[in-house]
Image (cartoon, rainbow, N blue to C red; front, side, top):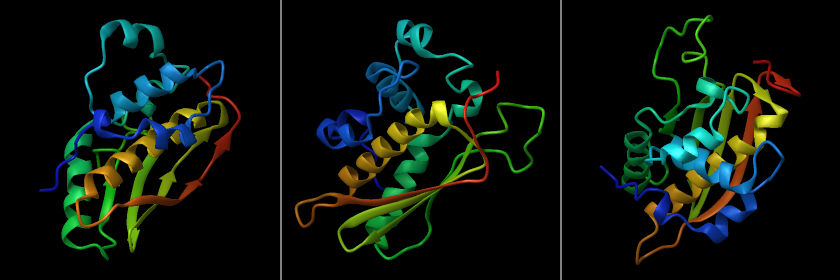
Length: 176
């Protein structure tokens, strides 16, 4: 299976394009949430400082099996560059309960595809609160950079191309 090298292998310069800082999400909070959702270990002090229901709570916790999911996408696109099966399904339950924030993840799927040496993606979301969108933009941007970095080798350099977000429902603020 392809190898996901973690956020430490990602290019900070590239991810600057995904930094949309707000009062709710200063740059350090964006980085902590992205690293957490990519499956990296987060210091308890950072969890206590940045994690809250208002910042997305368990609906915005995408980390379950994420390293394995990213490795699968990298493996798929390494072996089959024209594949349309390089997909990360975020929730891990096929029968989500409408009463459970843990089951009701806002982000549902991310579809990756290569156009030559350009990595593109489409993100499907069931809902998105505008005030939390900077966190998801940073996460997906960091994720795309990690996939592109993992696909880059001596023969080719994969660059990030277009990213499309599709949200069924958009609201201005998250209701806790």
